[in-house]
Length: 266
Ligand SMILES: [Zn+2]
View 1: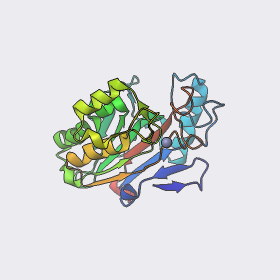
View 2: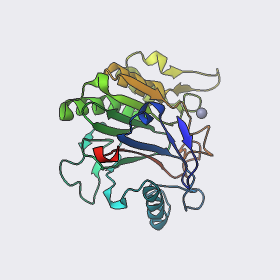
View 3: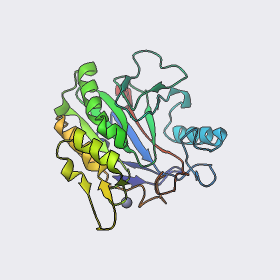
View 4: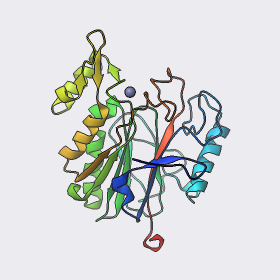
């Protein structure tokens, strides 16, 4: 990933997605907003204890920086599943649908979701001019949300997975993500080669899960041609990102967004 800090709100972008001028995307950090601790400062999550006025001010700050009308944002109520919403086909309404992924072929429709240890996944098909965003913690990984998003781009827009350029963003890493027996067993049942995703770094500690590799593998197994993995652990880097685990459960949410430009923007 590439770090951009020349404007008031710093963000990261992925190298493989940056090569397409017909696409805009960003992964924000916890910096550049107005929220006080423990949501300092660019908290984009509601219902985490922060004042809604701060959250709204934060949305206005980042959309202003990118020249995006605040009310154009499409998002979902994230529920740790594998449902994919198609945005742009019809108005999404004021109440976000319950889903963990969104796809669109509509230009200038920014898709955004929120994270604090779960895995951000961004996708772009430069041939069919479609994009998508997904959110996968352990439940979404077990439900194969990343794979479902690729399949939805194929069924909705005719995307050939080989054309899709995808990125796996900052999430809690195998260094920090200790999981219990329920998660181990769900991963063993749902993933190909689960032994590559589960490790025991020390004799005293428990089993650790690698969400980065799990989701990158799902994308590759679905035929995605290019997958970039950020490899940044939100818990190790909780001074940069919000981390639910690293911040002891009292934390904000950072966001990612992806949007198709119109041809006139090129
Ligand atoms: Zn870590």
